Length: 242
Length: 198
Image 1 (cartoon, chains in turn brown, red):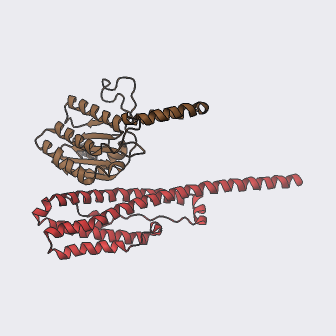
Image 2 (image 1 turned 120 degrees about the vertical axis):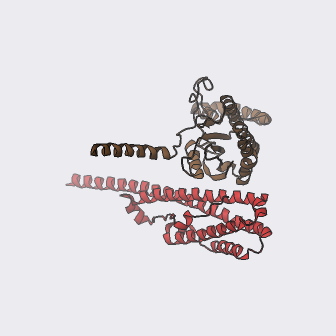
Image 3 (image 1 turned 90 degrees about the vertical axis):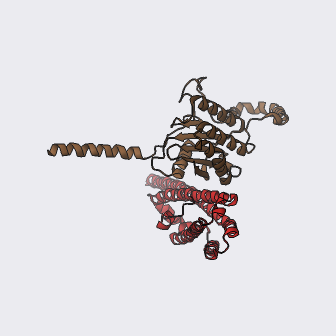
């Protein structure tokens, strides 16, 4: 008889330990990509499309928008978990802090937009709140998650567009680029022996993602996502639900 | 004998140089960590200021719909003006007393705002107005920033304090007048800071 008790106690203990471990929200050490859908809310095609859109936006503006969808907060607080994810993944450029994190927790029906320091001026708390209330929540209420996320991302892009440009020269900067090029042609040769600092920098300007070979898309979930670029966050943004 | 003296002098000089270098590196470490704490404090001040700046706007908005809630409105205004009088110079981060006083005043403002938001519940028109929704977002965001920056300040202060108290760092720290930094306490009042949510 006591043996049975022992077994029962032991198994209860094991269950308790596992339960407590299950209870706490585990922050994924890195994002799956621009889109991290751990709750399966988006169809594969919607996910791929959104991923491509966010990557293009990063390349054009250097602003990194991360979308993350989880099944549940596991009893944690929305703002706390959101900040920890932002601090772990660090979307945004290191020197510009131009990252945004759009978070959705399916079972808790909670949404949060976490805004990097560098974008707090344009994507204010008020604007973030409006995006949640007016763009995302209505779609979510109808059960249309993909279009809700897309509408949210579009609104975020609209708000932050123009705040930062990718550091490589774009169309209207062409004249300046030509001038710089000519100056470099004159100045560079004597300096060239000193090393390859210029090349290094240009590499970094691309926006922070590194691809292993060509297999980014076909390579599946992990593949070549090198992580975000080190932006920091100060708690700006807004929370909401549906 | 002469050779012995020479060696002794050389050893002393080497010892002095090593001590000096060590002193220098510890001193520099203290300086940079202290700068980290000051930087974190500046951020803390920043976000608290942000909240204080929201108060007039909040009061005006609520007044428009609920002018006769004078008492509650006045307590927010009073708490806000008390904060303006607090000395937040750099001395504050080395003085637990001053920091506690600062924290106390901020907590009073928090609870005054909290009471005001409870009052707002009784005015559906106000609650639904775009102006108030916007303010509510700003308040939420500011409270959240305060939490974040306070945590970062405590982390920076802890990092500095731990470094300062190690051997031989505390010798240098005491000689050069580096003092322990104060922490924000997680007080009971602050824990029950009004959730600006409905």
